[in-house]
Image (cartoon, rainbow over all chains, first blue to last red; front, side, top):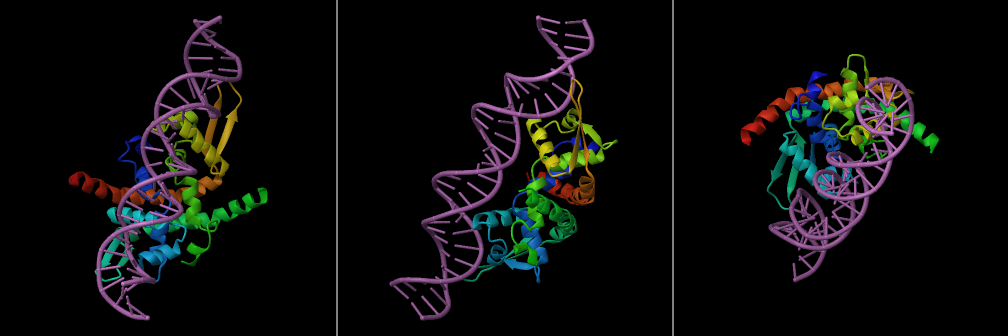
Length: 119
Length: 119
DNA sequence: TCTCATAGTTACCAAAAGGTAGGAATTGGG
DNA sequence: CCCAATTCCTACCTTTTGGTAACTATGAGA
């Protein structure tokens, strides 16, 4: 309770929201987490998230890399090969994210169904 | 893994992001969760989140109410008294949110410190 | 020489989010 | 009669977010 008011920088919720509260970050993290090898190339990610533009995927990955949640491994070949994977910090975040996802799976089916009935 | 591609409506991450990925929703939920009685009036919430404008607090609460995460109890007195509290669905979300918060507390002190050193 | 593939970047634009300031409704108290 | 208190709403504006489309670099293969 007390720490809510304890200032902008000290508030963990704001930290979370400002870092992966955007439209695509969690999806990227979860995609990497859920992939067989834990490693995905740019276009592989893009194929998993077709409605994310190249621009946004690129920006999202850059942001996640800057916050040390994903690794970016570049192979100097042509055509370029770049592989993304979760850092240890990124991996440590996944239980919290999957917890959120599990909650959503349990509750949003109802909501979606309810909404469909109403519409 | 497979369900990422399974369409927009079926993706639980998008459901979460679109519902409480905004700037204030999680803060409201957590404020209610962390308060002594579990009940807060509009101005009490506002005092806990002074940098949230009245407009945004009002909009956030309306949104959370529409998604059945908070109850809105109106007492027809003058001046008006409106009390907000978590619904059972809202309460069921809290473990996931506190998990995220705990993760952030563990990891963002480092990040903040690192950033301060670099700046 | 022409094309293809990869992993982006850039310019431009539209939409959404969010801030500020003021209003509105009500009625008990001075 | 006027003001204060509470919970909003509205108009207006700025900032942020995100989309589209085109462009870049490079070397391998036709």
